Image (cartoon, rainbow over all chains, first blue to last red; front, side, top):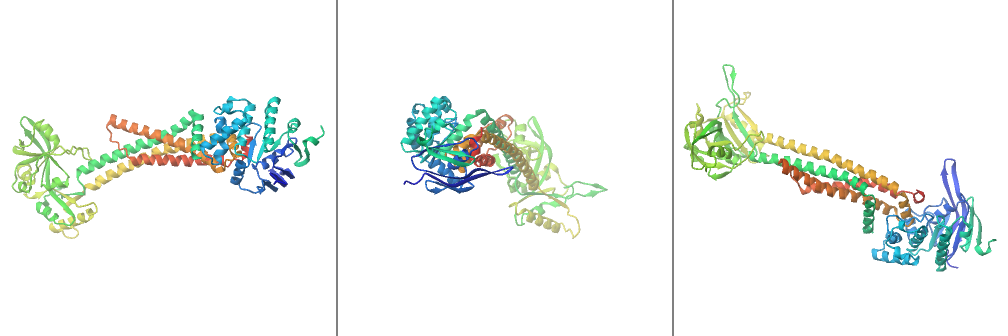
Length: 233
Length: 406
């Protein structure tokens, strides 16, 4: 068996609130293997966003352990986490989150700037990824010149530019119409077919249906874990 | 990486041009003010220094004392208590380079149909050396002229212009008090002294000639004033003590009797004048620096606004792998770039205005490379100092909060 991309053991996160500690996540165990395509579902307040932030190394857990490609990242320092986000992870957000003043090519190349890659290599890698999502012809345009669906494809290109082990997509179709959503989901399907591991957070069952595996959160706990084919329709 | 960040800083500055320009304006005015004020201050110092150097350096004047006759007291130099022999004795003292007994007064000069009233100084040749006075035309008189009371004269530029009106004065004969004098030289121009008196409006003749032919004196050999030059500023206190002791001994003054002469330190007055301008120059610089400070606060203010505005951008950058250090560098770089650009423009503006002041008012301005360097160093410091807090604030944002920010 190949080494797990993600392995979380008893992962928990509590927030300090005026009414005392609020446990957003109460001990989650989950293993994700290379090449998996998994959807995380659950209503708002179920803890799925907190879980996503922990998986994305944007936050650190208050209990449990998190092994990312075999390395325990639960208690890493902020700079080490930044490096992981840069080299190992690729983010796709609901709101696309492209920098409005930069050309699409520069947007896609931005993670490479923080990886310390030189300018020519950055340019080549960015153009390669833009080509892959079919938007090379807009390389020199600003994000405001293209549609939402196209912006999301650029965001995916940016997530891919550092050849990450894992793509984390947080409601990637939340701001898109159904037809464009389908296109984006097809793109994720293609990427997964190439062997890229994808973790998708969504609350829409038909979007989650694109994933091969679905897990469901409720009240800070993981309540179900199925392969998509086995789910009752 | 730094190059990429410089490019980004440039982009960010260009994104809101009016705001960047206004922020920069604060620095432009600050640096401009510092450059102008320093140019004016240093110019004033330079002007005073020039005046002081025309007076001669490390000078004392020794005046004969006053006397009282029937309850009426003469002023200083009223009594005939100093004489040429005193001067000769002083020149033997350690640390003394020049001793020039002088006798001066105002007399009417006549040449052809012209006449002119001016200050006539009777003295010895060493006076020219003590006062650092050059001869631009002709030659100086010598000790033999003093011994034989020849009627020769050196005239200042103002006298030459007013009395000889374009003629070459050298070799011409003019009259002082009905006595014919041959002009043997014209003195180099010195301009105004610290009191604003024209130093070129003067005639210098041998001491003995002045005493016998021009002023007349009841006691031949007595002088009212002796100018003494010390070899250096450090030697001045020693020279002063030496002269006091020497004169008291020569004049047979017992312990407890007051001096029958006055000593004045000319350089001290000049030094205090120089000190005044130096203080003024520092004061001007300090006041101008306040505007630099205000400019710096302007940068800080705008950077804080910018950090808030770009919270989401910061969150995105962090999510894709920017370390705190990277965010810090980015915002610091922006602040420093604004401050440097403002400094450069301020430097040019300041130089332009300083040169303009010089051209239109004739005020002396001194523009030094070191002033420009200081302004630049200050601008960089201001940029880093006032950019630091907003940049740190940006770097310490929580990525999750920042990404959620609308």
